[in-house]
Length: 321
Image 1 (cartoon, rainbow, N blue to C red):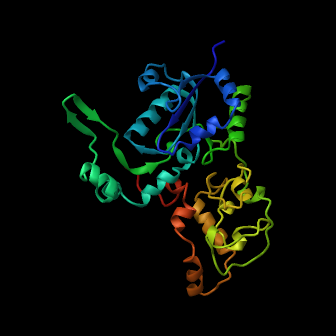
Image 2 (image 1 turned 180 degrees about the vertical axis):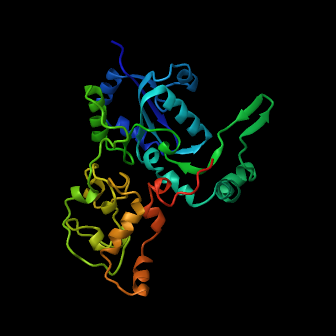
Image 3 (image 1 turned 60 degrees about the horizontal axis):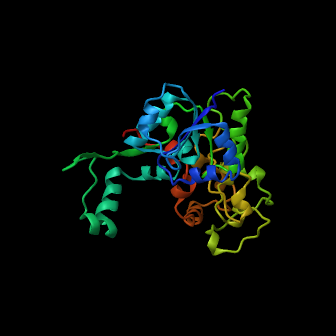
């Protein structure tokens, strides 16, 4: 029998999800033996033309990581949606918009201005010239992708079958998902989150929690924390109360706060709003001035509460390329 076919694609992301697949170690050989890999640009020499020639729905599984940041990302997302039977938003960036989604706090023009006209490295090398989608050269016309005004999660561009959260997904969970698909068991209902739990990161954290009220917040390097006690109750902003479980609370085990990369728990629409609610429950303040003083100690609230989920939050802006 022909082996099932697998495609892996990297859009707007750091590439950590690709490394996470390789972090399966020797099990990557099991993946290679179980699947006929038809697209994996980071590891093998495939061309888009190879995929365009394939019949629709001829790819059994596609793991798509990265947000949709430009016209090329969107084009390949639509192409892979047409060719894949099962399309998985793989990792935080494809599932929630991820860190690239923080670009939605500003505009495309401001980003291009900063990078190409204010950054010393690019001003010196190209004289502040902005990138153009089409440029005529002696050899012919060069075309590059168009940067979009708004960063989008994968399901804001195409229909997604399943989601695997994480920045990056934990290797054990990746293997569990692959193994489940290979088992031939009936797949969950479309839209399900695979490789994660149904509670919060706090539920799998071994740290002790008490009913403690906070007067002050700290950044992790400012204090020496007790490795046995809840970080949030020690004044460290930890996204555990607003984050889905399933990662094994690995950051907390390393004495670092949860960053929120597994996305909001089930039935939570806005991860940042959930975290604001959690913080308000531990503040020891009643007067507006005192509340404001304490909250002002949280560095970069938007980048903290919406580090991975801004593009999918209630704060998203009107979609436009």
